[in-house]
Length: 66
Image (cartoon, rainbow, N blue to C red; front, side, top):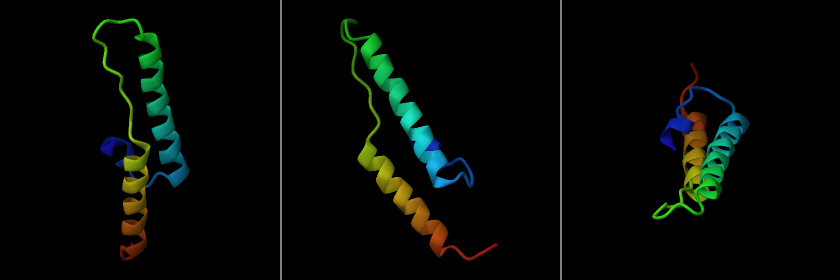
């Protein structure tokens, strides 16, 4: 998830779209492997993403310009 947020100065909406895309990919993998023995479901935490994104936004707001 850290990698999703370390994409330079991408606008917030772009980071949200990347997160949604990555999460949907995992959900599709889960569906594709529903009958695979011992397969463990994967997911990304929406709450963790929101928290990390909020921290990044606040850090950028409080950073000196330039």
